[in-house]
Length: 146
Image (cartoon, rainbow, N blue to C red; front, side, top):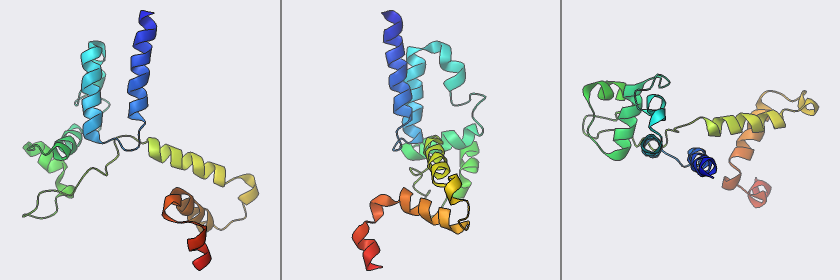
């Protein structure tokens, strides 16, 4: 019973991480919550964990999303998001926290590029994927108008 309770909690955390609307700030909050529940995971989920490629960039983006002040190292790492001297930074909510959406896109691309479509020119699959991925932006009537 106790094990099932913990497994359900962990499943909830992992499902939450798969949401496409998740921001880095939300992931950081979720990881902090997981560390509070399961302290043994602290070494793997802290902002400075070895798996984080650029901790200053990650922490800087989280702080920008939260509207907090950045440290010097974080400012340096987030410099490319700076717009001008007057305004601070570009809205960084579009930066995805995970690569799930990309993996789904490449899986869908693999389905489109079946053996039956090997004779297509390289730009055709690209157009097909663009249309499929942005399906909510067009409909049959719009295509008929073109």
